[in-house]
Length: 342
Image (cartoon, rainbow, N blue to C red; front, top):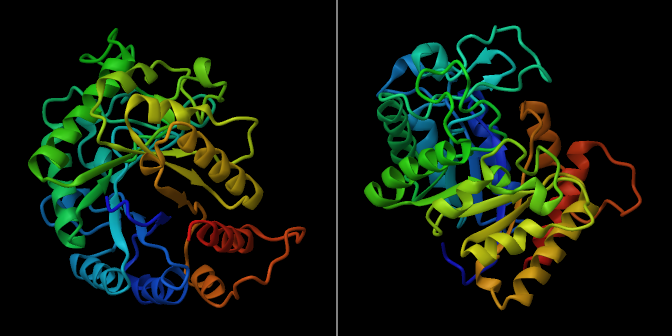
């Protein structure tokens, strides 16, 4: 990571061949003028895979990826593909295209497809299945090559299916050890073999007991002990979307030796508070280089209408007390945070 300039990062989910032109306009007319220099592109398995076509879950092609990567490069934006690893292999009991193609990888195959939260949140793959890494690493390689990327984001947030009682490999095992193993496996392939930088979400490494976070921003499930057993050159993206009294995980990650990038959503007040508090904690530790900037996430569905609306918004037109729709406030947050990071 080039730490000479603040990291001004933007995240979105994208996997549509039909929206590539709209996306390229978005990069050129919104992200580049806002001085965004990192784009975390969550395509997951919404990609036309050649190594494992049976896993293809979307329409984004290798040629599309090369076009997007070229536009990013022309505008000084580092593109980081993201594929959700371990957890988030679907929603409720619905399975991702990976688990549909390889049901033997499913940590909880006994959970019915119509299961819903709070009974069940999302499936995971089994980190101890002997064949899962071979398939997943092929998918990672294909995304890295298609986007000509020098970094990869493995996701790994909100993992709530792990060490299931009915898993013949994981039952009874320590969740922190299983989570750490999954991280170590991916690190071995991405950093040691492919020699790219590795990013991941930080919430499963945040002990709720130590930080006071809820079960989403922190861990009440037993994975957080992994923080002491994973390589310190993994870049942690630590998300907090509402204004909190404190964000102790920022300092904890720095103290543990990690580089941490706080991540916000559309709430402008919460985003500014998180950025200011993260800066303060880094400066207190004389570790500004290990809190190099911020990530702005977007979690709504990007379609043609939302791209058109976002592409035609005007900067500095929203006042702090304006009542805005989510997309408008996301634009205001983008305005404010990128200005504060210049």
